[in-house]
Amino acid sequence: MSINDYPRALLFGRWYRNEIDANGLESIEYAQLSSDGSFEFTFISLGATGEIVEQITELGDWGLVGDIHFTMTKNELIDEEMYAADLNNDDNYQAYKVLALDHQLFHYQHRVTKEEYIMRRVVDNHGHC
Image (cartoon, rainbow, N blue to C red):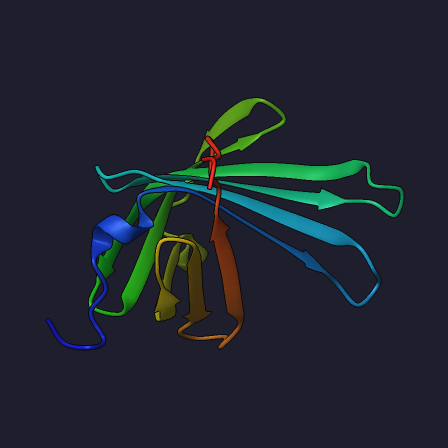
């Protein structure tokens, strides 16, 4: 394994990130990456008073090879209605370069847009340290 290879198992589980845009509005992403290669991403956009203005869930497949993380969206859940994604649409295929990955943090960069994202692991049960 080279220094640019990351163990795929490090991504298994639930992840979270949020951003504040230039207008002060918050967007949130929750990600569930399963060991069978399936994913569920939920994107939430909040209004100025914190109300949900949009919520979209994408379902599909993901993988990690070396330092390349990739996704393929197959379905979208919008307003509790499931829609098949158009697999002819290039936007349903994404690739990212992993910049850092450990048990708590996933830092990656989109291969085309160069946008960077940082996700943090969601811990369901807190230990007593």
